[in-house]
Length: 117
Image (tube, rainbow, N blue to C red; front, side, top):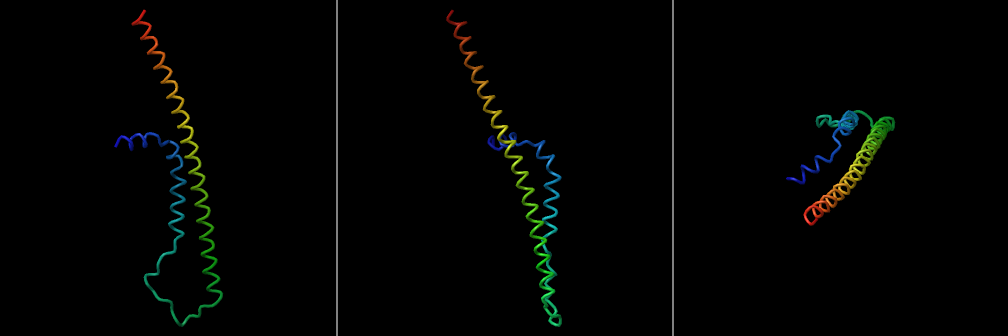
């Protein structure tokens, strides 16, 4: 349990919340790009499946593919931002650890001087 709490404390919530509208917009566009079922309707056999109909379907699928590629690129950019922020937090944590360790050493040295002198 403590591991989850410490992990949640390390997340840069302010930056994540500033990116939330872009994430939501990307998710909405991705959801809307998914073709919906026609309710189980079977194609009308009287209509011809012409090359034009197939071309239209192909262009629709291609447009959906390009939209999905844009969304994936946005997600990759956001992931890169979060990764950079985590690296900065890691560096700050290491610096804080070094300063704390130095303070501990100086405190122990001062205690030793006070007790033994």
